[in-house]
Length: 216
Image (cartoon, rainbow, N blue to C red; front, side, top):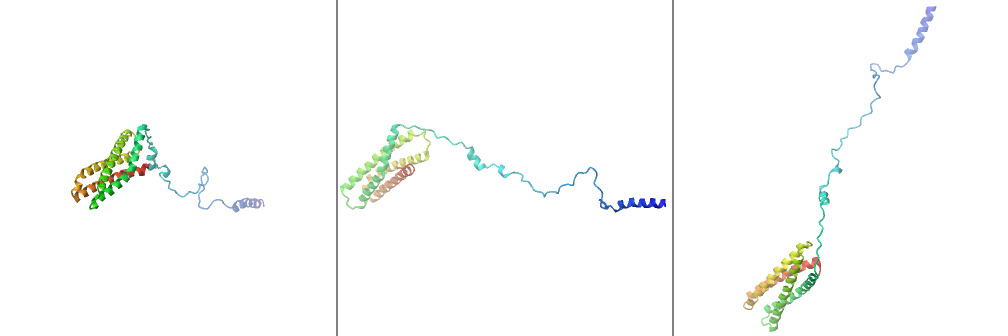
């Protein structure tokens, strides 16, 4: 009886242990005691740029930023300079009307079979006026060009104007040399006329570029 009681008591103590669910999966090994918590899920791989585009220097702007603007040199002119300049401008205003008058008189001498004496006389007077006009403008222009030799403002324009006007001076001098032979033949008259037209064209171009850039 006592033995039967002991057997029943042992069976009651073993039954709860057998009925409790197991936390382990059959065949699986348990983690070591000193392991940390489960690892976090891995993020997808993303390739980082080797160099940020914002850090690349803009060489096109760097050259302009590093360039130090040149300071213009102040040049003082005398009162005589401005007096000569005003006289030079007046001569340039008279230039084109004198050109037109001289061309009309010269063409009348060539085309008319019997031109009046006044045509030839007036043509010579206007030609002398034109020569004096260019003499004054040449002196005043070259003088002011020398006085403004240290001024760097629009030097290309100034030198281009001066070169064209000096070339027209040489052309008018050559035209005057051909005037003596113009009375002998039609061919000589055409050479005189063509030389005058070329000289007038050069002078007109030199005057117009100055008018367009600096005004009348």
